[in-house]
Structure formats: structure tokens, C-alpha cells
Length: 297
Image 1 (cartoon, rainbow, N blue to C red):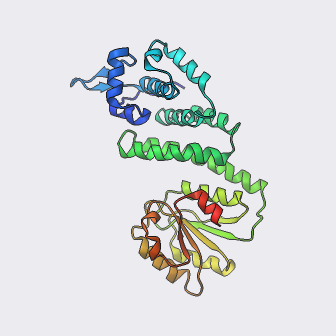
Image 2 (image 1 turned 180 degrees about the vertical axis):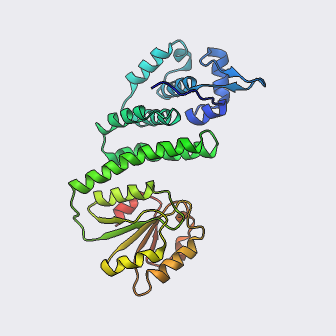
Image 3 (image 1 turned 180 degrees about the horizontal axis):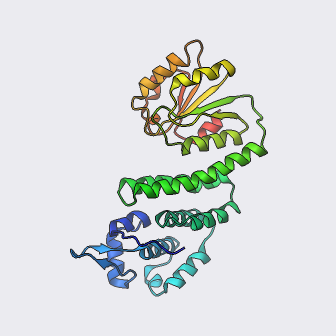
């Protein structure tokens, strides 16, 4: 797929590659590694080819190659060298860079090709933990610094969710539950970010638990009906941007869901992490690490 024409500032290149802007300027002046266009006000602007090249240069530099040597190579030689030195140690960084390029250019073919190469060597859990999670964290920072547009974030998140759905279907069809515990997974009202809770569902299924996922933006009162059919359940929610008032949400859970008996509620996400553990009822647990959660349950 051809690269989509886009313009990037030198700060964008810094955010995407990890190479400081002043270092890029110095390399341009000394080694002529990039040839930016200039605006009428003399501001450097770079295209997608420049982005791809600087990502490859950053990869080689991280693997011990000096810029003086890299600068003597053609773009084809740089790409070939990147492919040659890709190893298990640096495979994660290489894949993240490929996924970033796929995101910037809306290149689903590159995304699928990169994912296919990974899944031939690693299981999905390792790919998600070691590559997708760091990628999503980096994408979030790129959005916050206005390096990428919301459309880029939506695109890459949707591609990752497609792989997540495929693995959920596969694990449901290939594995039978080995534990009696049933987890009810839901997102609070006004919460729509579901990739985190979908991955938790995958981890629970992988560990042999039964799950029911009720989807995004669910009022607590809607879950009362489930308790009539499944009296012994454990609840789990992922709070990224909602609820606005976490203590109030916990109080409502206690009043609506736990009016006759106590039910466990496991909480994840940015909003949940704002709660002080010392203020929580015994049945409410906040987790900051997915793997620790799986180990403790």
C-alpha cells in the first residue's frame, strides 16, 4: 500500500520515533539524513516517507549502529538492515513501529502482515501484553500531544479489537470453563472504552472462569435482573472516563446491587485508580495490574 501524503512537524517526528528534535536537526545538517520541506515561515515539514525512514534509523540506532554509518546507506539498504537484525529482543519495538506506521497510513494490510508474523511465534496473551498494551499507551500520549488525530486512534484501536474478538471466539469454542465462578463484566453509564474489559474477559476465559459481558454504558439497576438467575456472581468493571464521581458510583453499587447481600466488585482503569484503597468497603477491590488480578483470583 502506498503511503498516504501527510505532513509532520519535527516535534511529531520526535514523539513518534523517540529521537529528540535537536538530534534530528543535527543529523540533518551533518549527515543529510532527511530533506524536509519548508513552510513560508521556514518551519520544517516532513512527509510519511521521512517518518518511516526516521523510525528505521531509530531502530538501527537502538541496536548499536552509529548514525555516521547509517547515513551512508540508501533507504533500501536501511530497510534491508532493519529486517536482518530484527531479533526476539527487539521484535516488540519493531512491531510497535510497524503498527504505528499502519495507523498513520490507515494501512490494514501492514497491520495484518505484522500481526501474522507475531502470532506465528507468540501467543495472543503475550502479543497483547508486550506489544498492544505499550502501543496503546504510546498512542494515547501521541493523541495528548496532538501528534495524531482522534481518527488515527480510533483506527488502530478498532484493528486491535478485531483481533481480540477473533481470539475471544476461538477461546470460547475451544475451552470449557474449569471453575464455577461467574464474572459479570460491564462498563458504567457513559463509559464506552471497552478494549480493556474485553481483554480482561479473554484473560478470565483463559484462566477457566465463566463470564458474561454486558457491554458499555450500563446503569447499575439493569443488573438486578441477573441476580435472580445468577445469585453467586462476581462483578467487574473498567472505568476509563466514567463515572465522574467514583465514590458515588461505589455507594450506588452497594445500595442497588448489595441491598440484600454483599457482592464483590473488581475495578480497573484510570478513574478507579483515583480511589484511595483505605476508603473502600471490603467487597470493593481496585487493581492496577491485570496479571496481578489473575494471580489473586
